[in-house]
Length: 131
Image 1 (cartoon, rainbow, N blue to C red):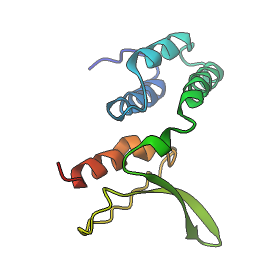
Image 2 (image 1 turned 180 degrees about the vertical axis):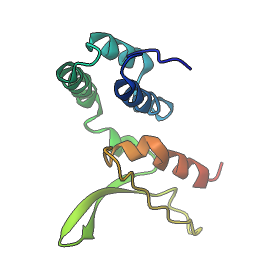
Image 3 (image 1 turned 120 degrees about the vertical axis):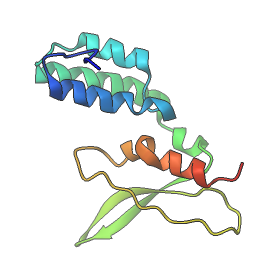
Image 4 (image 1 turned 90 degrees about the horizontal axis):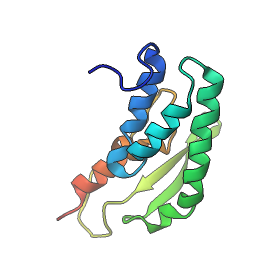
């Protein structure tokens, strides 16, 4: 598939595709992403840096207390690691007595802990929750 945006900049297109990947679980909106991309000057890293945080700031205003509204409850945790802590989130499929497998996810790339919600955590909870 040819790039919809940034045809001469594979890095910008790749990062845009990562954002599109968040759409399935509510982490992005296609129209909002398109408008953000249209405001970015291709190849201009300052433009990229300015426009995505502007979009994120607008969305964050709406989502500040969103985690508390999710079922299951998403609990922030600190994971001890080599004299410091790593931020994380604990998701519970439900509060039944039925044992559920534990899944530990990390991205190991330039992503954020919050991004893991859209790249697997929400799907894992859906798969473990009885219908």
